[in-house]
Amino acid sequence: MLTIEANERLTKVGPGTPCGDLMRRYWHPIAARSELNDHYTEPVRLLGEDLVLYRDRSGTLGLIGPQCPHRKMGMIYGVPEEHGLRCAYHGWLFDEHGRCLEQPYEEAEDAEGAFKDKVSIKSYPVEVLGGLVWAYLGPLPAPLLPRWDYLVMDDLVRDISYAELPCNWLQCQENSLDPTHVEWLHGRFSNFIEEMLGRGPKRTRSKHTMIGFDRFDYGLIKRHGYAGSTEEATEWADGHPIIFPYTLRQGGDGWDRERWSKGNGPAVQIRVPLDDHTTGHWWVRSFQKERQDLAQRDEDVPFVDLPIPALDHKGRPQWHMFDANPPQDLVAWFSQGVIQDRTTEMLGRSDKGIIMFRQMLEENIAIVEDGGDPICTFRDPSENVFLGMRTEDMRTMIPQGQAGRDVDTSGDDDADRRHRRRFNRFGGLSDVQVK
Image (spheres, rainbow, N blue to C red):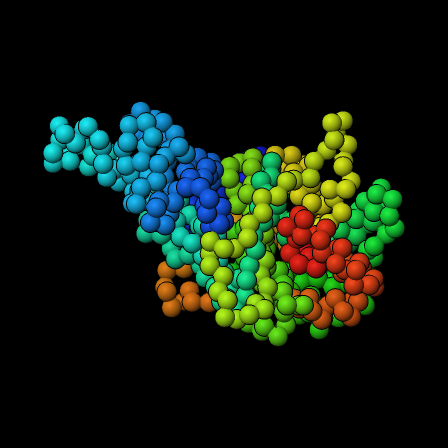
């Protein structure tokens, strides 16, 4: 268990907080680029700050403060110009660097532009990669936007899903360090859901017999094994990367594309702290192209804004919303409360990965407090060309029917297609999802 002070140190993300200062050293996804195809402004909340993302008519993106510094009208109503966003109230124009470019009427009295040169709006750097818009809210100069394999492979296509969750980011991310929830939440509980829906059980709960964690260059590797499996099995030998601080890496080995399962490439879940009580949860999936001559532009990557599973008007579960892994995970996280009370938790032997992750958080908070760069920040372009890693090989795990899989593979093709439709309805990460 943690003290109140230690829990707040790892969960609070506002400006000036220990974890907030750490998180400001990283680039965060704030939107899918395709969200801006049919409009010019998008509200953004990130690390406790309210901002406005905009696209001007030249296609340049900017991330600026929510209100014009003149009379404080909301910039979400801003009018895009060829370069910059103009306040709708009195026409003051700002660029992506926060500079005031024009002040109608004021310029008549100030031909040299001295007044506008004294005016600015808060702004942060943004970049587009892998179909996502990324923002950096920390001290300058900013580190390089990491070129993770799932973002830069050019022989695949991607899709993006998003859900906004009413809970703190840490309880979402700690789920990735929890191997045994697969056999219960996605096994026994999943079969109970099928029962409540009037259907038969579809998943076999297999007992974990091995759990291990190792540090690697980008975070932690989670290893696990089930009854009958060995240390040569891919889920132990290759493991499951957790990229510090907020990413779960799944499937699609970045180095060996022959290992991709059923045409699926790398996939991730990213848990972005919007504020202390809200998390932006991103799913990014990738698939091998059917035609290599067709390029997918960032603005063409499909995007789905997903609802979260809800209770009915009497506070009872609506079981039809829980028959896939993602909604089961989401409700496990936000039912812990907006910020999990870790002062009364009782961690066991299976929770060693959670303990290691908290230690890594504390270590990197201390690095930032000492003025250093935390893990997974890159400044040398030669070291940021292609950041790939090994992952457990789902292709070999599923057809062999090994223990512990969270999908019934004994059915016919129609059953498999139905499963995928249910899964994708909630932004699932392919036919199978292993946490």
